[in-house]
Image (cartoon, rainbow, N blue to C red; front, side, top):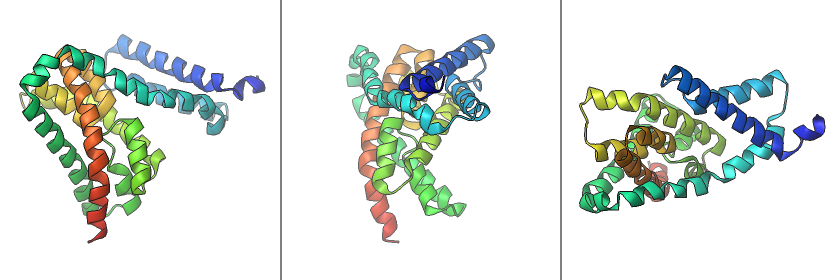
Length: 232
């Protein structure tokens, strides 16, 4: 048993099993708060604590799954390709929307951090929260944040967008498919895209685009913002 735990297979197996459990519960109860990712995270943490298993042991396999985050993000180009004509028709408003959304995401973090007197390291770690995990952790490391902390914020942001996104659209009577997709991808990355794909093909395609473009914009904006902050 101990030899099995010390192999990458353990981390991979427990991750897949936990996510499968999350999907089963989500489909059975059909409640947004019972998000498969949220359930799987809670299940893995509970399992490791209950059996007193070190995180390093789990991460031998868990890191393998993390390695595929980048390639998985690239695969999102497939639904976008199917909607390429729609993208060409609305190219300018789409790019402007993603750009302004990315700026708003960073600006809101800085303003709220200053307002609530958060530690600077916490603020820095929060800045890339709206980009997908593979990009966010690299940005966090580059600008002096804590990647592990950033990863936590990324998960919370994604799940939050997944849950409250549809309610916001209803509240403000947003019905445009492109607008919904861009909002999901820009604000809540992969989890938002998963929800967008549930809503419709156009929403999913636009959200897939927003993930990549918002990530690229944040890569350039984050260091620039840090230089501005250091001047004041």
